[in-house]
Structure formats: C-alpha cells, structure tokens
Image 1 (spheres, one colour):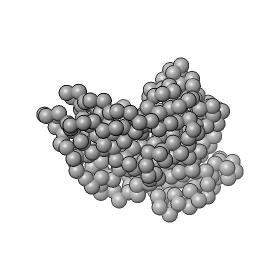
Image 2: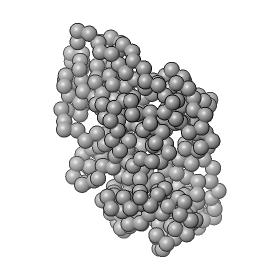
Image 3: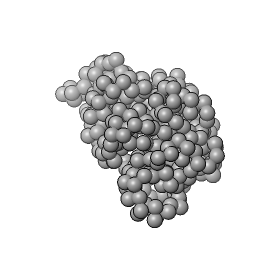
Image 4: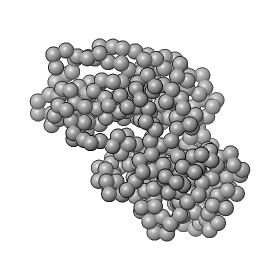
Length: 338
C-alpha cells in the first residue's frame, strides 16, 4: 500500500458508574500505524459487540483476578472478534489481498493485525454470525463440556442471547427431545418458539422460576446450559432428574448487575440435591477446546440453523448497541456492519 488509511475506532472515554452508557465511549480518528514485516492490514467489515465489554470497562476490573480478558482504561480502544478484508499482507504469509480473515481487533474500521492472529476465511460469501456468533461456544459446551443424549430435556438460561439462541437449536439437532429457555419478555419468548424451535419459555419476571420450570418440564430436566447463575441455577437444581448434567458458561447476574459489573455470582444451592440426584456440575470455557471451532464451522453448514443476530449499521451506532445489549433489548449475537 502506498499510504496507510485513517482509522476510526471506539475508545473508552471513562469508566461507567453503573450500567455502561453510550457517552462512556468516544469515537476517535487516528493514523493507522505502518505494518511490520509480519502484519496484515485489514479493512473491517463486521465486528461483534459482547456484553463482557461492560466488565472490561469497570473501574475495578484491573484489580480483579481471573478475568479472562484485558481490563480497559480510559483512552483504550475496545476490541472484539471481527471479520475484515485483507488490504495488504507480507509475501509468504499465506494470505491473499481481497480475501476475508477473522481476527480479534474489532471496534475500528481498519486494523493492523499480526499474521498469527488472523484466520483465513476465503473470499466469501460470508455469514458473519457463523464466525462471530457464539454458536461454536454452545456446540463445544454440548459436545465437550457435557454431552447431549437422545431424548434429553434441556433447559437453557438467557435463551435469546448470543449463546442461548444457538444452544437450543444445537441441542435439538444433537438429539434432545424437549428444549426450554428463559428470557426477559413475552415478545422474546414468542420469537424463541417461532424461530429458534424452543418448546417452552420461562420469564424472568413471570413468577417463581421454580414453578414455571416445573410446569414447562413436569418430568424434570436432564441438561442445564447456564449463562445466568443465581436463581436460574437454583431452580435448575430443583428440577433436575437423576444424572442431570449442568454446564455453566456465564453468570450474567454478576456481569449485568446494575450496581456494577463483577465476577462474583453467589447462589445458595442444596448440596444434598446435588448428591442425591447425582448431578454433574461443570464450569466450562470453549476457549479450552479451540479445535472445536473448525469442527463447528463444518458441522453447522448442514445443520439448518437459524443464525440469530441483531445487525447494526456503522461504527457510530456501536456504543448504543453495547448499551442496548447490556440492557437485554437485543436478540442473538450483536454485530456491527461497516
């Protein structure tokens, strides 16, 4: 390239006081740095908006041990999974100008990315949600974290979200007989049944979760895929059949706490029930099974899945999209198209 393009990027303006607001972020323009001998220059086409960004932006995040992503300070550029088109690449890199690559530097319109952090996706067409969505997280959880058995009844918390919107569909295709999900509104519940194939939904504000779950699964549940924790986890233990398997992927009760994001999500569980019902309870991160991603990409091509997503147009809309995602207003994976 004869000259490097300007780069617009979203930065943290200040630590949020409670729920992250669009005004906590700022869009800045800067000169893209010259690439090194092992760098790829990419024009981003899509990037993911993750609610975990709220925890990254928290004032106390740097002091908390165990957060699996870097804390943000004011002035830092946000980052998340992205898909872009190669504008320039070093000879012998294995990449080709004009092809798509995935990489971890979203929240900007251009990026200089080390070769080792790019994955070639070919020239398209591209379904961005297949790569940027969390279908592969759900797939890994249901094939490696625990395993679905034919005839299982599966309960998924936060079932309209990025992971949950895929977990119910994947569980069904792996042999589950009945799939139940939780969500925050009747509108989402109707959408889950109509588009995602859920058999029933329980509402977070629709009365005691234990009672709703008992009505939706009168014979109990075999599998619980949890992104919420708290009362959802307690209710799932009460509804579990003997030999139930729980896979815990997140704890939104902590991440989306209106008083401030944290990684502390207490829940009072009846340990006798865990013992008497022989419940397996496993915390799981798909990042430990990276090989599952390539398997997921191949598997999903013939699975007939509905890629649930909210598509947002333009970098300027990204701060509002993050706020709306954290408020639970959006469906599926949230993707910004550039």
